[in-house]
Length: 316
Image: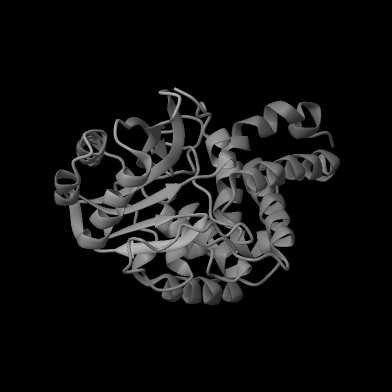
C-alpha cells in the first residue's frame, strides 16, 4: 500500500523539522549537532518511507522515534555539555585569570523565542538554559524519557514504542529523572520572556551601557549567578557579580552597546564593546533568567559558533 509519506515525503515531514531540531538540542545541548542529527533523521526516514505504517503511528511520532534513537547513538561515549556552574564551586576572586577551557564541550544557547511560530515544541519555560543544562546530567535514556514524556507529552506507551522498551521501564526512568532534576524540572507555568522580564533586562542593558555598576547591581537577586563559558569560572551573589563587572569595564572600557535578542525562550542581549579602532565589536551573547523584578542568572557566551547560530554580525 502506498502511503501519503511515500507519495510526497517533503510535504509530510517539513512541518516537523523545526521541532525536531529543538528536540535534538534538548538531548545534545548543541545547536549544530542538533541540526546535523535532524539531517540524519530525515535521511533515515527517507530510506524507510516505504515501510512507514500510518496505522501504527503518526508521522510526528515516527519521526521522533527516529530522531531520539539517532540522538542516543550520538551520545554513546560523548561527554555531557555543562555550564561552568556544573563543574565546581563559585569563585570569590573577581581578578581570577580568564583562561578559556576549549576541551570542554560547553552547552550552547538556542536561538528561539517562547512564541516561535515555527515550533510548538518550545513551550513556556521548557527550553530554558537551566533546564537544558540540568538535563545534560541525566543518563541519555532518562533524558530521552523526560523530554518525550514531560516536555512533548507523549504517552508512556508511545515512549516505550519509540525506545523499544516496556511501559514499566519508561515510568521507572521518568521517576528517576524527575527526582534527579528536583526543583529544575519542567514547570508548564514558567514564564521566561514576558514583558516584565524584558523590562528588567532593558534596565540592565541601560545600566551596562552607562557603565553604572551600582544601578546594575540593584537589578540582581541577592544570590544572582554569573557564568561565562568557555571560561570555567562563575560567581554567585550581588557583590562578586558587581566586582567582576567593574573589572570588565576596567579591561574593555566603557561605551558598550547592548542589542536585545532572545535565546532559549529567555531575554538575551548581544553585547558590543568599543575597540581600539573606535568601532563597536561583538563581544558576547548574554542570556538572562529573571525572577520577579530581578536578574537571577546570567550566562555570557563568547563563542563564534554561537554568534553564527544567532546570526549576530561581528561588527556594529
